[in-house]
Length: 133
Image (tube, rainbow, N blue to C red):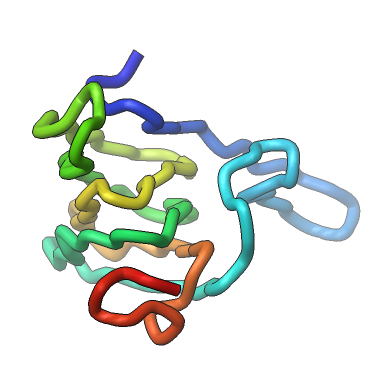
């Protein structure tokens, strides 16, 4: 059980196939995104930090696909049973994490570059300043 309601973390398994290596990042059966709005790859250099960023509407799924990273969350959702709770997680293997809307999320590369994939239910340009899609 995590200290933040709706937090999801799943190790990713890399498999060797006759066609090369495969790393499945997200499946429909994970039930993490209610719609699709953005997919991007990011590379952070050692010690480089992204966020914390608060998305009021968009759910985001982040996958560490290479390197080591530390993820951080802070629940800022009014009425959440875990409002105000914080959590951090250091990952040294490919890992999928969820940043639910209303939860501030950040990540930092540890000891060398970290390659990440970000999938979100809404792209930043789809949402106005009030968080309305």
